[in-house]
Length: 260
Image 1 (tube, rainbow, N blue to C red):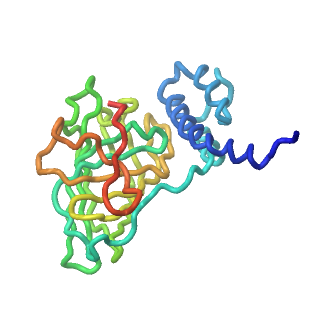
Image 2: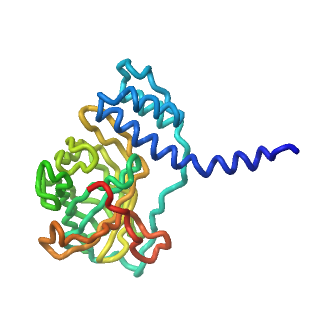
Image 3: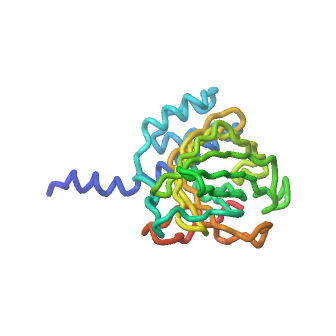
């Protein structure tokens, strides 16, 4: 009795997103842990990622470039659009932002973002001050600010409550990198939506350079929840919300905080 090729293909597709995520994570580990190249190189090959010999010196940038061209598109991340209440919300105060990288979704980057919207101009504009938070207990006190703040101003808000923020360079101290503990230099695009006065969210595209190695993080997600001024450490929301809601009506359940 002959098998159904179409059915086999359909069934195999179910597992490709898992391979994509694991492949990204292994590639990241390949760069961050050179002593493990042989073992990781073998694992990467299993996920269909080309490597240049387990014991040779591969070009990390080319490795990621080649991989990025071959990965399976697991589907678009959700980003809400439109203004839930009809008007642009009066965003103001401190927001706990959790960013879930596409290469390792549970290795959250956490920041306090002081966010203000100026509704007196047309179009409305946002100002945002990003402050990284410690996630590495060996380097700093978890949940407390670490590194210098990064300021962005004049971010236009559309009538649909969306914004497109281009960041040429944002530095996060190693203590804010929950995966490796190494400093991150990000060249990022934040595509966001102001859901309410209490919450905004969206997707992140771009490159996060770690130790000089460029790591693509396109299709990452973030969520930013308003907190009382000065909220830090154990008082921050747990679990964090790190993406837009699936139904466009409110915050989702967040991402399990397994990395810290």
